[in-house]
Image 1 (cartoon, rainbow, N blue to C red):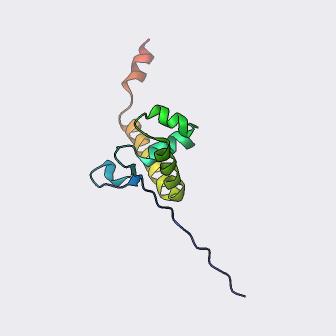
Image 2: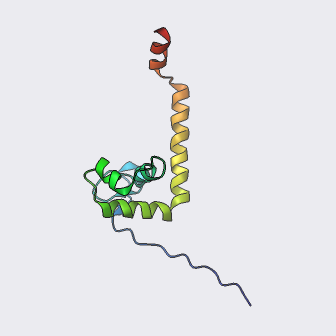
Length: 108
């Protein structure tokens, strides 16, 4: 008996768009400049609940946050790679341009 392939279904995300002129085509919540990645970071890394996220972003509605999280989980591998690339860029910039605040603290 042959193995049956698992069919992957994708959800429609009516509140998520990609626009070349906004955030380098990073997926955003429509009508805003709020990136799906930023919502995912607040939820996953910072541990904020969807209610706390809308408290931090009063221009968003709960259904938009849930759609952003759904989009993130459906495209997690791709978006996690973008998050890691952003972290690496920050590391490189910190190495190349050290904080002047560290030098001030050392003088105290």
